[in-house]
Length: 429
Image (cartoon, rainbow, N blue to C red; front, side, top):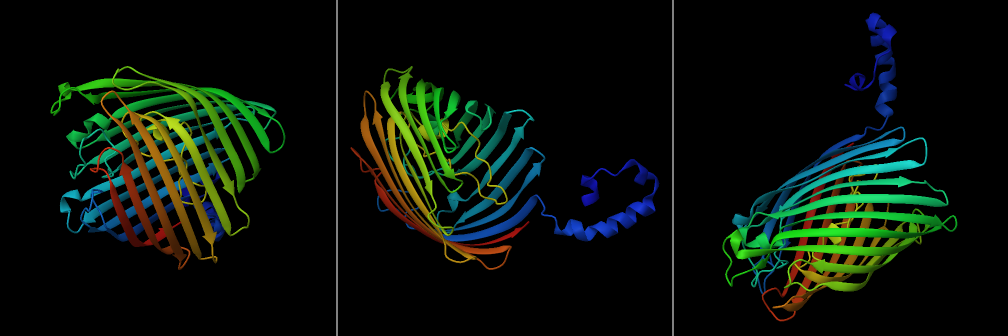
C-alpha cells in the first residue's frame, strides 16, 4: 500500500522486476518511518450522580464505546490534519437518552516561501446537550436533546517573526438543537478580526486590532407566555465591535502569557435585551517549572450570548503527533448573557514515563440582563484525572468531576453533580 503513495520513476515502469526488488530492499526502512495515520477504540464506563442536572436529580450508569481515527501529515511547509471520534452512549436507566455523538475536525496549515502563512479549519460536533439549563427556559428540561455545533475558520498572517506582522481571521459558527423547546438557544455567528503586531524583542510582541462579531438568534425572545410554534418567538441579532490591545510574551514553548484588553460595544436588535458597552479581556498563561510539571491559567470577561464559542477565530487543531485537540470549547452561556466572567486553572504532572495526572478548576459567572429578567448564573467544576500507558498502544484512565451550579432568582437550575468513570483505549499509529 505504501507504493500507492509514492510516484514511481518513469524508468521503473518498464522494469517491473527492478521495481519489485527495490520494494523488497526498502520495506524494512519504510517500516521504521512514522505513519501519519492513527486508528483506535475506547471503552468508558461512568456513574453520573445527577444525570439531568436538576435539584436532587437521579443517578445513572453510562457506557460509551468510541471509534477514533485521524491523520497528521507534514508535507514540506504544509500540514494536513484530520480527526474523527464517533461514540455510542448507552444509559442504564434513562434509556431514552441513548445517543450517538461525534466530533470531526479537518484542517490545512499552509505557508509560502515568503512571509505569508495561513490556515483553514472545519469542525462538526454532535453530543447530548448539558442538562444545566443553559437556555431561556423557565424550568430545567429532562428531554433528550442533541446539540450540533459546526464551525468554519480561516486565517492569514504576513510578516513571520519579523518586527512587523499582520494577521486576519474569520469564523462562521452554528448551533442547533434537536429538542423543540430549545429553539430559543439556536443561533449562528460570524467573527472577523484584523490585528497588527510590533515585535518589541525576541520574546514579546504587542498588537492592536479590530474584531467584529454578529450573532443571529431567530427565536431568541418568547412573545407569549407558553410559546409553541416558531411564530411565538421574536428574533434578536447581537452585534459586537471590539478594539483589542494584545500582549504576547513567549519565553519558551512551555512558558508563555497572552493578554488581551478590549473596549467592547454590543448592541441588540430586540429591545428586550440590553446593550453593553465597557471593558472586556482575557489572559492565558502557561508555565512549566520542570519537564514533568505544567500549569495553565485562563481568566477573562466577555460579552454576549455564547461569547467564547463565537469569539473563537483561530483553528482548534490536533497537537502534532497526538490525538489531542486544542482546548477552546464553548462554555454554553445563557441565551442573552450580557457579560460572562470565567476563570480556569489546570495542572498536569508526569509522575513517570507511563503515568500522568491532571487536575482542573473552572469558574463561570454569566450575567443575564433583560427587560423581564435579570439573573446571575454561577457554575463551578472541579476535575481530576489519571492515565496509565500499559504499552505504546494501550492506555487506561480514570476521571472524576464535581459540578456546582447556582442561579439567582430560581431553584430550577441549581444542582450539584459528581461523575466518576474509567476507560481503556487502544491506539495504533
